[in-house]
Length: 266
Image (cartoon, rainbow, N blue to C red; front, side, top):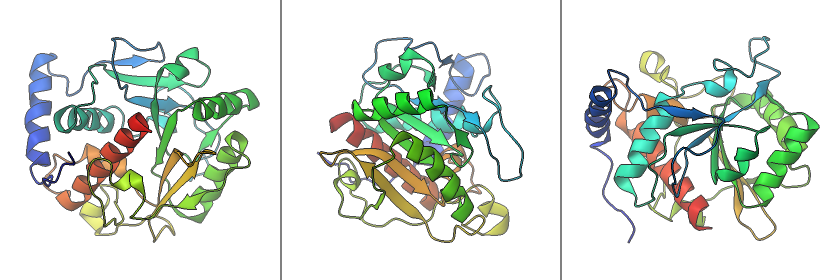
């Protein structure tokens, strides 16, 4: 049965739940995560963050693969808040801690769903691109987030074309099944970073219009869900902040829970 209740209570829920986690884990605000060494406990679903080398950054600097590189923005709090929501609001079995997955690791194929951010900076060797290609064609699901404007899109697509050179990118519609597998999402709007709190601006660079896009396999299944000109990670991370509007965090959680449910059932 589809859930119909709104997520108005999520900020309070996360404040209480994260606070409980802090007490249980010696004052830390998030659980331990596994770093590229595979699943830690048997689980139906593993929240997995993609680790990659950065070859370009908007400021002209070059990133790196270790923690602190572009791939780790908002990690681990944003990811952990989503994992809390998944456990609280769905029946997907997900006792595992957070995972960081590297394309060089064979454990890549242990994880059905991967989240990647700042993807305008990612770079792949030919071998890495081939492994991500194989992962997606074998049934994996990739969600990308937090990149903005024309230049970011071009840099993102340069990497994506290494991975899936012949697959078209399409705009998703409100009627697409992915928006109705758990929550019925009939209205989507731009989800900004926490910069919105001080500026009131929902866009960054020249990314004025949110882009909900996807790449499908030959059977029509979505393999790559693309959230361009948005920052869902910040909406999750700041969901327990009274200054960040609930309408943004509420939609961001509904989106990701629908994407996960779709990935696990298609």
